[in-house]
Length: 280
Image 1: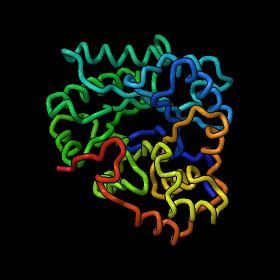
Image 2: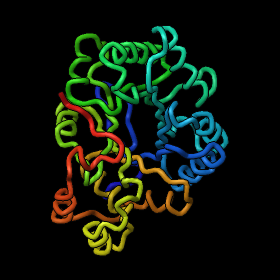
Image 3: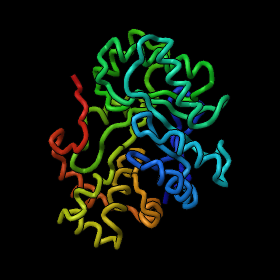
């Protein structure tokens, strides 16, 4: 049986990413420090934030005041859109790193948060990230919400290819089969955001039936499902008990039959609650 400490190797790198992460999307500044402390306390060693979330500084404060050495925590942040020039974009990246880890610090992974800035914007962002990585301010770089063609177009200019990670919405109702298969073929780690579908499916009869069989919560079943799909799930909660429960997913395994039952729920792009990628 795997454990919360299990790691995946990142492509073209000596770095490793923990198989389970803790998300802080919309975790209010007043709550975020406590939630990250709780996550670290129960064993998470992978924290996922973003400029968009408005809590990079709070994540940084939590890391500085926790009883866990910085080098034991895998830390991710993201940039949404380029600034006015390559230099300004790079400065925006450095600002994030310093917010989270202080001057001279580093993050483990920096992602382009969205593909929506167009081909020129995506190129601009990637080149700024490559510079950040070359300077040691991030160990790894990747993308989020990118489809097949958007990753393929990077080949023309990227010094670092493939991106080491693609973070996309993934759960039984939105399995994004094409991009998932493409990433796995190319050695790109697939991270799953909204793996518990923001609890919108907590009363789904099929999911409830499976969870009763294992005497687990629906959230635990969904996180376990993501792990067995080979994804790196990033469940988010600000509830201390739920934070702990969401990490307690390594003492059971879903059968092949139950994986098939959950796989059968796929609605393609229609099943997305945030965004399904466009692959063409």
